[in-house]
Length: 461
Image 1 (cartoon, one colour):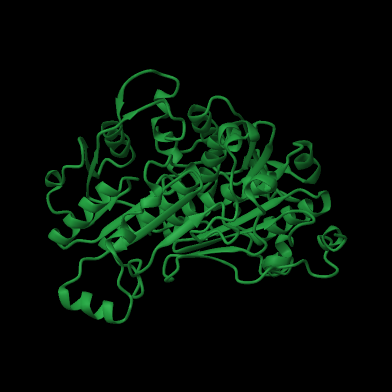
Image 2 (cartoon, helix red, strand yellow):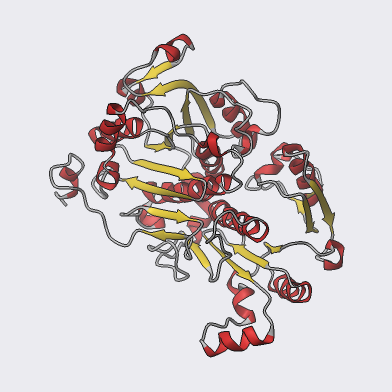
Protein backbone atom coordinates (compact mmCIF):
# COMPACT_ATOMS: atom_id res chain seq x y z
CA UNK A 1 0.00 0.00 0.00
CA UNK A 2 1.28 3.48 -0.88
CA UNK A 3 0.48 6.34 1.49
CA UNK A 4 1.79 9.82 0.70
CA UNK A 5 2.91 10.88 4.18
CA UNK A 6 3.73 8.72 7.20
CA UNK A 7 4.81 9.91 10.64
CA UNK A 8 6.14 7.28 13.06
CA UNK A 9 6.73 8.06 16.73
CA UNK A 10 8.68 5.71 19.02
CA UNK A 11 11.41 6.15 21.61
CA UNK A 12 12.85 2.62 21.61
CA UNK A 13 16.11 1.21 20.35
CA UNK A 14 16.67 -2.09 18.59
CA UNK A 15 17.83 -4.73 21.10
CA UNK A 16 19.06 -7.61 18.93
CA UNK A 17 15.60 -9.18 18.59
CA UNK A 18 15.49 -11.40 15.52
CA UNK A 19 11.69 -11.15 15.52
CA UNK A 20 11.94 -7.56 14.32
CA UNK A 21 13.00 -8.73 10.90
CA UNK A 22 13.37 -5.32 9.23
CA UNK A 23 16.40 -4.78 11.46
CA UNK A 24 18.17 -7.88 10.17
CA UNK A 25 21.23 -5.89 9.09
CA UNK A 26 21.92 -5.44 12.80
CA UNK A 27 21.32 -9.03 13.86
CA UNK A 28 24.03 -10.16 16.29
CA UNK A 29 25.50 -6.66 16.37
CA UNK A 30 25.66 -4.46 19.44
CA UNK A 31 24.92 -1.17 17.76
CA UNK A 32 22.37 1.11 19.39
CA UNK A 33 19.87 1.75 16.61
CA UNK A 34 16.84 4.01 16.87
CA UNK A 35 13.92 1.94 15.60
CA UNK A 36 12.03 4.80 13.99
CA UNK A 37 15.04 6.23 12.18
CA UNK A 38 15.95 2.82 10.76
CA UNK A 39 12.32 2.14 9.83
CA UNK A 40 12.19 5.51 8.09
CA UNK A 41 15.20 4.46 6.00
CA UNK A 42 13.74 1.04 5.14
CA UNK A 43 10.34 2.42 4.08
CA UNK A 44 11.98 5.07 1.92
CA UNK A 45 14.12 2.36 0.33
CA UNK A 46 11.04 0.29 -0.46
CA UNK A 47 9.16 3.22 -1.99
CA UNK A 48 10.94 6.47 -2.75
CA UNK A 49 7.62 8.22 -3.46
CA UNK A 50 6.56 8.05 0.21
CA UNK A 51 7.35 10.93 2.52
CA UNK A 52 8.13 9.18 5.81
CA UNK A 53 9.48 10.78 8.98
CA UNK A 54 10.61 8.81 12.02
CA UNK A 55 10.45 10.80 15.26
CA UNK A 56 12.49 9.34 18.11
CA UNK A 57 10.43 10.55 21.04
CA UNK A 58 7.88 9.67 23.66
CA UNK A 59 4.44 9.90 22.04
CA UNK A 60 4.09 13.68 21.78
CA UNK A 61 1.10 14.05 19.58
CA UNK A 62 1.50 17.70 18.65
CA UNK A 63 4.39 16.52 16.47
CA UNK A 64 2.12 14.85 13.96
CA UNK A 65 -0.08 17.74 12.80
CA UNK A 66 -3.51 16.59 11.61
CA UNK A 67 -3.29 13.22 9.83
CA UNK A 68 -6.09 11.34 8.08
CA UNK A 69 -5.89 8.50 10.56
CA UNK A 70 -4.16 7.76 13.86
CA UNK A 71 -2.68 4.31 14.57
CA UNK A 72 -1.66 3.09 18.04
CA UNK A 73 0.24 -0.22 17.96
CA UNK A 74 1.58 -0.13 21.51
CA UNK A 75 0.86 -2.42 24.43
CA UNK A 76 0.52 0.64 26.66
CA UNK A 77 -2.98 1.61 27.90
CA UNK A 78 -1.69 5.10 28.73
CA UNK A 79 -0.64 5.61 25.11
CA UNK A 80 -3.98 4.33 23.83
CA UNK A 81 -5.86 6.67 26.17
CA UNK A 82 -3.90 9.64 24.80
CA UNK A 83 -4.61 8.43 21.27
CA UNK A 84 -8.35 8.27 22.01
CA UNK A 85 -8.29 11.84 23.27
CA UNK A 86 -6.42 13.02 20.20
CA UNK A 87 -8.81 11.13 17.93
CA UNK A 88 -11.73 12.97 19.53
CA UNK A 89 -9.98 16.31 19.37
CA UNK A 90 -8.95 16.02 15.71
CA UNK A 91 -12.11 14.14 14.65
CA UNK A 92 -10.13 11.40 12.91
CA UNK A 93 -10.37 7.58 13.18
CA UNK A 94 -8.11 5.71 15.57
CA UNK A 95 -6.91 2.21 14.76
CA UNK A 96 -5.79 0.57 17.99
CA UNK A 97 -4.06 -2.82 18.02
CA UNK A 98 -1.96 -4.90 20.40
CA UNK A 99 -0.35 -8.33 20.38
CA UNK A 100 1.18 -10.82 22.76
CA UNK A 101 3.15 -13.95 21.88
CA UNK A 102 0.07 -15.92 20.83
CA UNK A 103 -2.77 -13.42 20.64
CA UNK A 104 -3.62 -10.17 18.91
CA UNK A 105 -6.53 -7.75 18.85
CA UNK A 106 -7.63 -4.78 16.78
CA UNK A 107 -10.43 -2.21 17.02
CA UNK A 108 -11.30 1.01 15.22
CA UNK A 109 -12.57 4.05 17.10
CA UNK A 110 -14.48 6.70 15.18
CA UNK A 111 -15.23 9.97 16.98
CA UNK A 112 -18.94 10.57 17.52
CA UNK A 113 -21.01 13.58 18.39
CA UNK A 114 -23.23 13.55 21.48
CA UNK A 115 -26.37 12.56 19.59
CA UNK A 116 -24.65 9.54 18.04
CA UNK A 117 -23.40 8.42 21.45
CA UNK A 118 -26.90 8.66 22.95
CA UNK A 119 -28.41 6.64 20.10
CA UNK A 120 -25.78 3.93 20.44
CA UNK A 121 -26.29 3.84 24.19
CA UNK A 122 -30.03 3.32 23.75
CA UNK A 123 -29.33 0.40 21.42
CA UNK A 124 -26.87 -1.11 23.93
CA UNK A 125 -24.12 -0.85 21.32
CA UNK A 126 -21.91 1.62 23.12
CA UNK A 127 -18.36 0.67 24.05
CA UNK A 128 -16.46 1.92 27.06
CA UNK A 129 -13.09 3.61 26.94
CA UNK A 130 -11.58 0.52 28.57
CA UNK A 131 -12.57 -1.58 25.56
CA UNK A 132 -10.07 0.34 23.44
CA UNK A 133 -7.22 0.24 25.98
CA UNK A 134 -6.53 -3.53 25.71
CA UNK A 135 -5.52 -3.77 29.34
CA UNK A 136 -4.78 -7.51 29.14
CA UNK A 137 -1.93 -6.83 26.67
CA UNK A 138 -0.08 -4.41 28.95
CA UNK A 139 3.67 -5.18 29.07
CA UNK A 140 3.20 -8.34 26.97
CA UNK A 141 5.98 -9.54 24.72
CA UNK A 142 4.84 -9.51 21.11
CA UNK A 143 4.86 -12.58 18.85
CA UNK A 144 5.58 -12.95 15.15
CA UNK A 145 2.38 -14.73 14.17
CA UNK A 146 -0.11 -12.35 15.82
CA UNK A 147 2.04 -9.42 14.62
CA UNK A 148 1.73 -10.58 11.02
CA UNK A 149 -2.02 -11.08 11.12
CA UNK A 150 -2.94 -8.02 13.16
CA UNK A 151 -0.45 -5.89 11.20
CA UNK A 152 -2.14 -6.91 7.95
CA UNK A 153 -5.58 -6.10 9.35
CA UNK A 154 -4.38 -2.74 10.68
CA UNK A 155 -2.88 -1.78 7.32
CA UNK A 156 -6.13 -2.66 5.58
CA UNK A 157 -8.07 -0.46 8.03
CA UNK A 158 -5.65 2.38 7.29
CA UNK A 159 -6.35 1.90 3.60
CA UNK A 160 -10.12 1.91 4.22
CA UNK A 161 -9.91 5.14 6.20
CA UNK A 162 -8.21 6.87 3.26
CA UNK A 163 -9.36 5.04 0.14
CA UNK A 164 -12.60 3.07 -0.23
CA UNK A 165 -12.51 0.67 -3.17
CA UNK A 166 -15.95 -0.94 -2.84
CA UNK A 167 -19.41 0.26 -1.76
CA UNK A 168 -19.25 -1.94 1.38
CA UNK A 169 -15.60 -1.11 2.10
CA UNK A 170 -16.22 0.02 5.67
CA UNK A 171 -14.12 0.37 8.80
CA UNK A 172 -14.37 -2.24 11.53
CA UNK A 173 -17.35 -1.87 13.82
CA UNK A 174 -16.25 -4.46 16.37
CA UNK A 175 -13.10 -6.00 17.74
CA UNK A 176 -11.25 -8.74 15.88
CA UNK A 177 -9.21 -11.13 18.01
CA UNK A 178 -6.81 -13.80 16.78
CA UNK A 179 -5.86 -16.27 19.46
CA UNK A 180 -3.55 -19.20 18.70
CA UNK A 181 -4.44 -20.72 22.06
CA UNK A 182 -8.16 -20.83 21.25
CA UNK A 183 -9.60 -23.84 19.45
CA UNK A 184 -11.91 -21.41 17.67
CA UNK A 185 -8.97 -19.10 16.84
CA UNK A 186 -10.94 -15.84 16.98
CA UNK A 187 -12.08 -15.69 20.60
CA UNK A 188 -10.57 -13.92 23.60
CA UNK A 189 -10.85 -16.97 25.82
CA UNK A 190 -7.93 -19.41 25.59
CA UNK A 191 -8.46 -23.17 25.67
CA UNK A 192 -4.77 -23.96 26.02
CA UNK A 193 -2.37 -22.89 28.74
CA UNK A 194 1.33 -22.97 27.88
CA UNK A 195 3.64 -23.81 30.74
CA UNK A 196 6.74 -21.77 31.42
CA UNK A 197 9.06 -24.35 29.82
CA UNK A 198 7.18 -24.01 26.51
CA UNK A 199 7.93 -20.29 26.44
CA UNK A 200 11.58 -20.84 27.26
CA UNK A 201 12.16 -23.66 24.80
CA UNK A 202 9.95 -22.73 21.85
CA UNK A 203 12.90 -21.74 19.67
CA UNK A 204 14.24 -25.30 20.02
CA UNK A 205 10.98 -27.11 19.25
CA UNK A 206 11.27 -26.72 15.49
CA UNK A 207 14.99 -27.12 14.94
CA UNK A 208 14.64 -30.68 13.59
CA UNK A 209 11.67 -29.98 11.26
CA UNK A 210 11.83 -29.93 7.44
CA UNK A 211 9.29 -28.06 5.34
CA UNK A 212 8.79 -27.86 1.59
CA UNK A 213 7.29 -24.56 0.52
CA UNK A 214 5.88 -24.63 -3.02
CA UNK A 215 5.67 -21.09 -4.37
CA UNK A 216 8.06 -18.22 -3.59
CA UNK A 217 5.71 -15.43 -4.60
CA UNK A 218 3.32 -13.29 -2.60
CA UNK A 219 2.29 -15.88 0.00
CA UNK A 220 5.75 -17.48 -0.13
CA UNK A 221 7.47 -14.27 0.97
CA UNK A 222 5.46 -13.96 4.15
CA UNK A 223 5.33 -17.70 4.91
CA UNK A 224 9.09 -18.02 4.37
CA UNK A 225 9.62 -15.12 6.74
CA UNK A 226 7.38 -16.68 9.39
CA UNK A 227 9.04 -20.08 9.14
CA UNK A 228 12.54 -18.65 9.40
CA UNK A 229 11.58 -16.62 12.48
CA UNK A 230 10.01 -19.77 13.95
CA UNK A 231 13.38 -21.51 13.65
CA UNK A 232 12.48 -24.33 11.25
CA UNK A 233 15.66 -26.33 10.67
CA UNK A 234 15.35 -26.90 6.90
CA UNK A 235 13.21 -25.03 4.36
CA UNK A 236 13.07 -26.12 0.72
CA UNK A 237 11.53 -23.51 -1.60
CA UNK A 238 10.31 -24.52 -5.05
CA UNK A 239 9.40 -21.97 -7.72
CA UNK A 240 9.98 -21.50 -11.46
CA UNK A 241 9.56 -17.73 -11.74
CA UNK A 242 11.86 -14.72 -11.82
CA UNK A 243 11.25 -11.44 -10.03
CA UNK A 244 9.52 -8.95 -12.33
CA UNK A 245 8.67 -5.28 -11.93
CA UNK A 246 5.14 -5.99 -10.66
CA UNK A 247 6.29 -8.16 -7.74
CA UNK A 248 7.88 -5.92 -5.10
CA UNK A 249 4.63 -4.12 -4.20
CA UNK A 250 3.34 -7.29 -2.52
CA UNK A 251 6.46 -9.48 -2.23
CA UNK A 252 8.29 -7.39 0.31
CA UNK A 253 11.55 -9.32 0.59
CA UNK A 254 12.39 -8.52 -3.04
CA UNK A 255 12.65 -4.81 -2.20
CA UNK A 256 16.06 -4.52 -0.61
CA UNK A 257 18.08 -4.38 -3.81
CA UNK A 258 17.46 -4.55 -7.54
CA UNK A 259 16.32 -8.14 -8.02
CA UNK A 260 14.40 -7.80 -11.29
CA UNK A 261 15.12 -10.80 -13.53
CA UNK A 262 16.64 -12.95 -10.77
CA UNK A 263 15.17 -16.28 -9.76
CA UNK A 264 12.74 -15.88 -6.88
CA UNK A 265 14.04 -18.90 -5.00
CA UNK A 266 17.57 -17.48 -5.04
CA UNK A 267 16.53 -14.00 -3.91
CA UNK A 268 14.19 -15.26 -1.20
CA UNK A 269 16.73 -17.78 0.11
CA UNK A 270 19.32 -15.04 0.47
CA UNK A 271 16.90 -12.65 2.20
CA UNK A 272 15.71 -15.24 4.72
CA UNK A 273 19.27 -16.35 5.43
CA UNK A 274 20.15 -12.74 6.20
CA UNK A 275 17.25 -12.53 8.63
CA UNK A 276 18.07 -15.80 10.40
CA UNK A 277 21.56 -17.14 9.64
CA UNK A 278 20.91 -20.18 11.86
CA UNK A 279 18.46 -21.91 9.51
CA UNK A 280 19.13 -23.97 6.39
CA UNK A 281 17.34 -22.79 3.25
CA UNK A 282 17.59 -24.28 -0.20
CA UNK A 283 15.89 -22.84 -3.27
CA UNK A 284 14.94 -25.24 -6.05
CA UNK A 285 14.27 -23.69 -9.46
CA UNK A 286 11.62 -26.05 -10.71
CA UNK A 287 8.00 -26.91 -11.30
CA UNK A 288 6.04 -29.34 -9.16
CA UNK A 289 3.90 -31.58 -11.34
CA UNK A 290 3.92 -34.27 -14.01
CA UNK A 291 5.15 -32.45 -17.10
CA UNK A 292 6.94 -29.37 -18.47
CA UNK A 293 5.73 -27.43 -21.47
CA UNK A 294 8.07 -26.47 -24.28
CA UNK A 295 8.73 -22.99 -22.91
CA UNK A 296 9.59 -24.33 -19.46
CA UNK A 297 12.00 -26.88 -20.90
CA UNK A 298 13.75 -24.18 -22.93
CA UNK A 299 14.21 -22.10 -19.77
CA UNK A 300 15.93 -24.95 -17.95
CA UNK A 301 13.12 -25.46 -15.43
CA UNK A 302 13.52 -28.72 -13.54
CA UNK A 303 10.49 -30.99 -13.25
CA UNK A 304 9.94 -31.97 -9.63
CA UNK A 305 7.69 -35.00 -9.57
CA UNK A 306 6.66 -37.29 -6.75
CA UNK A 307 9.98 -39.12 -6.44
CA UNK A 308 11.99 -35.86 -6.37
CA UNK A 309 9.64 -34.37 -3.80
CA UNK A 310 9.86 -37.41 -1.54
CA UNK A 311 13.68 -37.34 -1.67
CA UNK A 312 13.49 -34.10 0.34
CA UNK A 313 12.14 -36.16 3.24
CA UNK A 314 9.98 -33.31 4.48
CA UNK A 315 7.66 -33.23 7.50
CA UNK A 316 5.17 -30.81 5.94
CA UNK A 317 4.24 -29.32 2.57
CA UNK A 318 2.95 -25.76 2.27
CA UNK A 319 1.36 -24.77 -1.03
CA UNK A 320 0.83 -21.22 -2.19
CA UNK A 321 0.18 -22.16 -5.82
CA UNK A 322 -2.07 -20.67 -8.49
CA UNK A 323 -3.59 -23.64 -10.31
CA UNK A 324 -5.94 -26.45 -9.30
CA UNK A 325 -3.79 -28.83 -11.34
CA UNK A 326 -0.82 -28.25 -9.02
CA UNK A 327 -3.01 -28.35 -5.91
CA UNK A 328 -4.45 -31.71 -6.97
CA UNK A 329 -0.97 -33.10 -7.64
CA UNK A 330 0.32 -32.01 -4.22
CA UNK A 331 -2.75 -33.39 -2.48
CA UNK A 332 -2.33 -36.83 -4.08
CA UNK A 333 1.29 -36.99 -2.95
CA UNK A 334 0.41 -35.82 0.56
CA UNK A 335 -2.41 -38.33 1.02
CA UNK A 336 -0.52 -41.25 -0.53
CA UNK A 337 2.57 -40.64 1.62
CA UNK A 338 0.80 -39.34 4.74
CA UNK A 339 2.51 -35.94 4.68
CA UNK A 340 0.68 -32.98 6.26
CA UNK A 341 -0.26 -30.33 3.69
CA UNK A 342 -1.38 -26.73 4.22
CA UNK A 343 -3.05 -25.15 1.21
CA UNK A 344 -3.72 -21.43 0.83
CA UNK A 345 -5.01 -18.99 -1.74
CA UNK A 346 -5.48 -15.24 -1.81
CA UNK A 347 -7.25 -12.54 -3.79
CA UNK A 348 -7.06 -8.76 -3.30
CA UNK A 349 -9.79 -8.69 -0.63
CA UNK A 350 -9.87 -12.26 0.61
CA UNK A 351 -8.10 -15.55 1.22
CA UNK A 352 -8.42 -18.93 2.87
CA UNK A 353 -6.36 -21.62 4.55
CA UNK A 354 -7.10 -25.36 4.64
CA UNK A 355 -5.12 -28.08 6.40
CA UNK A 356 -4.66 -31.79 5.72
CA UNK A 357 -3.23 -33.59 8.73
CA UNK A 358 -3.10 -37.37 8.03
CA UNK A 359 -5.56 -39.35 10.12
CA UNK A 360 -6.83 -36.21 11.85
CA UNK A 361 -8.46 -34.05 9.16
CA UNK A 362 -9.93 -34.29 5.71
CA UNK A 363 -7.61 -33.82 2.73
CA UNK A 364 -7.65 -30.75 0.50
CA UNK A 365 -9.83 -32.52 -2.08
CA UNK A 366 -12.46 -33.20 0.59
CA UNK A 367 -12.28 -29.50 1.43
CA UNK A 368 -12.30 -28.03 -2.07
CA UNK A 369 -12.92 -30.68 -4.76
CA UNK A 370 -9.53 -29.92 -6.28
CA UNK A 371 -9.50 -33.08 -8.44
CA UNK A 372 -12.73 -32.08 -10.18
CA UNK A 373 -11.56 -28.48 -10.56
CA UNK A 374 -8.22 -29.67 -11.98
CA UNK A 375 -10.05 -31.79 -14.59
CA UNK A 376 -12.17 -28.79 -15.54
CA UNK A 377 -9.07 -26.63 -15.74
CA UNK A 378 -7.35 -29.14 -18.05
CA UNK A 379 -10.43 -29.44 -20.31
CA UNK A 380 -10.57 -25.69 -20.68
CA UNK A 381 -6.82 -25.71 -21.34
CA UNK A 382 -6.57 -23.04 -18.67
CA UNK A 383 -3.60 -23.87 -16.49
CA UNK A 384 -1.94 -20.47 -16.69
CA UNK A 385 -1.19 -19.34 -13.14
CA UNK A 386 -3.81 -16.86 -11.98
CA UNK A 387 -1.38 -14.63 -10.16
CA UNK A 388 -2.33 -11.24 -8.84
CA UNK A 389 -0.21 -9.40 -11.41
CA UNK A 390 -3.41 -8.17 -12.99
CA UNK A 391 -4.28 -6.57 -9.66
CA UNK A 392 -0.87 -5.07 -9.00
CA UNK A 393 -2.37 -1.61 -8.48
CA UNK A 394 -4.86 -2.88 -5.90
CA UNK A 395 -3.55 -1.79 -2.49
CA UNK A 396 -5.35 -4.61 -0.66
CA UNK A 397 -3.52 -7.58 -2.15
CA UNK A 398 -0.43 -7.36 0.04
CA UNK A 399 -2.59 -7.36 3.19
CA UNK A 400 -4.43 -10.53 2.13
CA UNK A 401 -1.09 -12.27 1.63
CA UNK A 402 0.25 -11.15 5.00
CA UNK A 403 -2.89 -12.17 6.92
CA UNK A 404 -3.23 -15.58 5.28
CA UNK A 405 0.48 -16.33 5.68
CA UNK A 406 0.38 -15.58 9.41
CA UNK A 407 -2.46 -18.06 9.82
CA UNK A 408 -0.49 -20.69 7.89
CA UNK A 409 2.48 -20.39 10.26
CA UNK A 410 0.11 -20.60 13.22
CA UNK A 411 -1.23 -23.92 11.95
CA UNK A 412 2.35 -25.17 11.41
CA UNK A 413 2.91 -24.98 15.17
CA UNK A 414 -0.23 -27.00 15.83
CA UNK A 415 0.52 -29.69 13.25
CA UNK A 416 3.91 -30.39 14.81
CA UNK A 417 2.99 -30.02 18.50
CA UNK A 418 -0.75 -30.45 19.16
CA UNK A 419 0.06 -31.53 22.72
CA UNK A 420 1.53 -28.06 23.30
CA UNK A 421 -0.48 -25.71 21.09
CA UNK A 422 -3.72 -27.63 20.55
CA UNK A 423 -5.12 -29.19 17.40
CA UNK A 424 -5.14 -27.76 13.92
CA UNK A 425 -8.34 -26.66 12.19
CA UNK A 426 -10.84 -29.17 10.80
CA UNK A 427 -12.51 -26.64 8.50
CA UNK A 428 -11.00 -23.79 6.47
CA UNK A 429 -10.24 -20.33 7.80
CA UNK A 430 -11.70 -17.57 5.64
CA UNK A 431 -10.62 -13.94 5.41
CA UNK A 432 -12.76 -11.30 3.72
CA UNK A 433 -11.88 -7.63 4.03
CA UNK A 434 -15.44 -6.64 3.09
CA UNK A 435 -17.20 -8.77 5.74
CA UNK A 436 -18.09 -7.43 9.18
CA UNK A 437 -16.11 -10.17 10.99
CA UNK A 438 -13.09 -9.99 8.65
CA UNK A 439 -11.90 -13.52 9.57
CA UNK A 440 -13.91 -16.61 10.50
CA UNK A 441 -13.34 -20.30 11.09
CA UNK A 442 -15.67 -22.43 8.97
CA UNK A 443 -18.74 -23.25 11.01
CA UNK A 444 -18.78 -27.02 10.61
CA UNK A 445 -16.26 -29.83 10.95
CA UNK A 446 -15.22 -31.36 7.64
CA UNK A 447 -14.68 -35.07 7.94
CA UNK A 448 -13.15 -37.05 5.05
CA UNK A 449 -15.53 -38.33 2.41
CA UNK A 450 -16.12 -42.05 2.72
CA UNK A 451 -14.06 -43.72 0.00
CA UNK A 452 -11.43 -40.97 -0.19
CA UNK A 453 -7.95 -42.41 0.49
CA UNK A 454 -7.50 -39.83 3.24
CA UNK A 455 -10.37 -41.43 5.17
CA UNK A 456 -8.66 -44.77 5.74
CA UNK A 457 -6.63 -43.71 8.78
CA UNK A 458 -9.23 -41.22 9.95
CA UNK A 459 -12.06 -43.71 10.47
CA UNK A 460 -9.77 -46.33 12.05
CA UNK A 461 -9.56 -44.21 15.19
